[in-house]
Length: 435
Image (cartoon, rainbow, N blue to C red; front, top):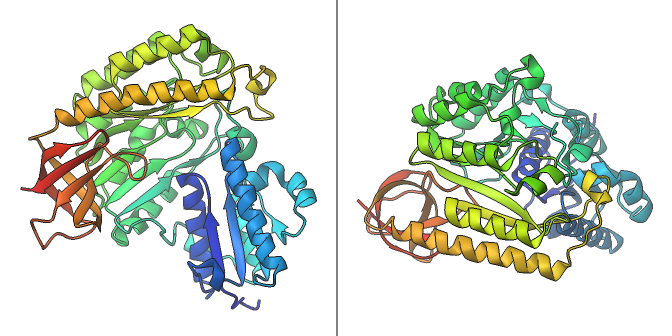
């Protein structure tokens, strides 16, 4: 088959899971001698990997498609291809409304999608590249997706509609990919999936994420393993022990609780009560005292009363999550919650979001103040405005806070670990010097 010599720009929108998908596509293109460009103005063809998770993400995806189509109509692009969640969910509607796109691909069957996309570009799928990715993150950290889809029935979430049922990636494929990443110089592996704590249940009826982390920790070169998207319902107890006892696993966990009151959790179909969820969070913190717990919340959910909101505020103030993000509820067609009238005005949703973030700002400031004078191990990500900027085990890239390290040591290198002492703080940042 003739190999395309056209220059390609791949635009990735949405979450880190989409980023990983794009990295697999880029690896296949590169090994088909396709030139990948960063600047869309230099591209002959554009591939847009879309997000369709919430309304704002869908708007961004559609606007990006329309912009590319406009460039095509002006003769600045030859072809426009669209893949990802939005395409998977709304393919018939998109083909009707934006027919100028040359082809839409879905997101559910990754291998089929990549093969079809490569064929459109005149390329061959290379099966020997299993686990190979062209990293688009900084070279010392990478995301590792261990599953596709989700089996949880959360009322507000369209992920199962777009991504299908949960499918665990086989352990041997996970380890091969992790070994390849380590050989590229990756030191921090960030474990992702729609529900990482479900891993293995579809294979042998056991949630065996702890074993996955343990096996990855045996790979030379990997120094940090960070777990994201750990669903709280039916949380495996052995995972707590693995995080606590394994030195390579960051004492950090991302558990998206979404809410805390029984009524809202029931309406959200989260499969957990306030007490069970609170007991789990307390157990994790008690058994791993140095743990950093990150969570995300949804406020403005249709059944969230003012009483529910006040109870949520109180819980956040008392428990003091180390890291916290807040989304306003977005009504997603096809979901269970779409049948509930979206009765809370948008301005009220924003007010509640702001109140929660103000509470978290105070908590973060208090925790950062208590860090002054302490020593931390940091991984340096970049240099900016005369500071080396890094992260401790408590911080995932892009979503958490950073540590600004004074350049007292000229031999500091990007992608290396250093021990630092904290000497100052802000609400969401720390300042340190190398010990």
